[in-house]
Length: 264
Length: 261
Figure 1: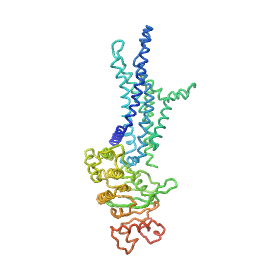
Figure 2: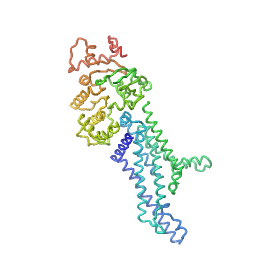
Figure 3: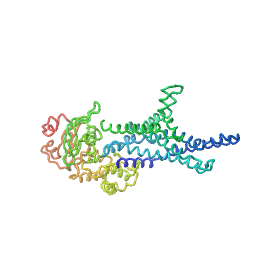
Figure 4: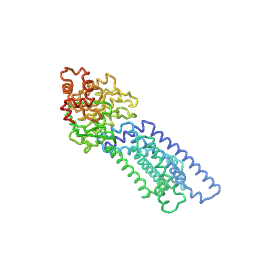
């Protein structure tokens, strides 16, 4: 475990002494800010229209958390999917390219310790990205007031949304780590994991106009479909199981790939 | 300390190491000598558990390299051909990372880093980023990493490549100073290096063992009747040339080499 922590510490050290982590955070927060402003404007516009039309019913149905925060998180999902491959690409591929893989493989550590250390560092980065996204609902809560005078933000829904984003990031990093274990080129690692993750994200478009079990299958495989529950405030076992299965599979395959180097 | 028997490594149809057998006693410094592509690095990679052998076994301190890799890796300090350094880290952060990987006790780490940094003369660059260091310094940081925790066995793949003449001398002195406490295998194709630092010489060519003997033994065997001192290196070039012209060397009566095959 100590070796795994040492590897995680070194990875974080590299991430934060090179621009990689900062650029990724900048991309995520930049787009989060745009989507936040956009959804806030849309919310204001709809409120004004409802007031003009004196529609009590419409006003009561308006929910700040769902309409602003939920929408923001939904759009951030795709940026996590896009950003994660650029964070995970160097994890093992760069070690191989710069010959430092030899150091890891000849040190008295087991493959799973290497994989775990790398993955822990990746999780810290995802956690930091999600924490940055969490700043937006936090800002909003300073200004939002509920119609009954209570808090304007439903923190439970925000919490499940953040959990969903974190699980999505954890899945993306596990997939990216595995791809990174297969190549010496960071570019190949980034592109392949990006393609795999994007395909999973938009899985349902492959079966537009199709009915029946095939459509159900793509819906069950879709990373975005499984995020929807979290965004509307539900933690469902099938969604948690979906993300964690990818994490488990990704880590297992990475461990096999690293162990495989000892045999060939 | 190191027992290699009938080691063979094939990469598809290329035979990198061909039925290599030798034994190194505790405390010996052995020079691994051979032209480029002779299988020196491959043998070292097998010894350190980085690549598996196709056939044959290698044992370090009684542990089989493939069956009990962790026990072997705990006892080996390895410096690969290209120094395995992380360009983004400072030398100190890098050495700390290596020390933690090797599982040195937390409290001993700062002292141990100072010790190996002093030995390899990198104390002045400890707080600099490795990517900005010269080749010679990178090489020595890589060497410092191998020395961390005073492992019983040191495997050094061309430790003096990229160093300037004065640094080369320092590293040779350092390696010499390791004799007795550590068992050292160092590869090189610089002949004077072998004469100056090693007690025994292992000559390989095209993956095969050509001869394995002490310097005096080599002189007696291949230059009988010649009086040479170890300061004079020309004799070694002569022996090396003889050994690498394999057929003629084989036809000559060489009981030791024939036995090793």
